[in-house]
Image (cartoon, rainbow, N blue to C red; front, side):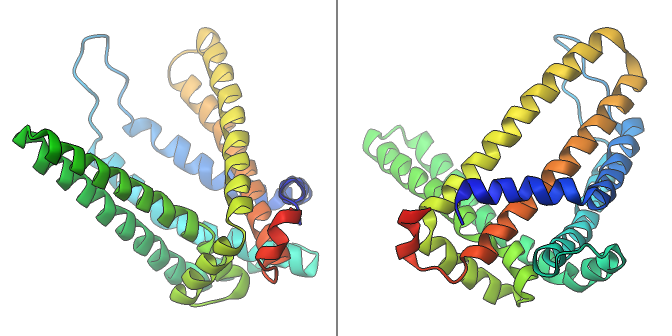
Length: 265
């Protein structure tokens, strides 16, 4: 499967399964509207910075935890669409519960790996800067860049692991190993696919920003927050299904391919 074919398939699946998009939209809307009362207004020019309230912090944590459940339901449902040709929303909650702990632990492992790398990068910079030793600072810069590249590599090699975990109903570490092996075989294609999805998201985000800017001249206050929250929730819901479908389709189509397939994609 070519990268463009995978993207096309992602849009096709999202377009034909709007009920799945609706579930994600409702979840996003609850979050976007629920945080409005706890979101501080932007300070005036020269004012003090905005701090996150304890209530908003708690809501953010609950949202992240709930989003893991939604992710499991979405990926399980997409697997049904791809493999069986039909969407069974009755299984959504079951998939969310079935994969919840595995997806949560997988996310924590990835966050921990990236966090440890980030900590060491920060430590190296903080330790070398006060010395004012040019050679030491140069070495620290090289080490920091190497750590940054290592962090990026972790994300690249593991970002398919949640999709693989659900598509294959695997254990956490087996999904990690499978993701690494898959990306190694088709690394240029996977990076290209990721970049294209990011560019699509960036382009749509830019348009949404322009729309929000225009609306801000017409509508003011909380109603503007509600309206933009609903619009953003809908767009993000659709894009999340597109991206998940695209990556799932590409993995399932190419999982048996070796490196020799790379040149043809």
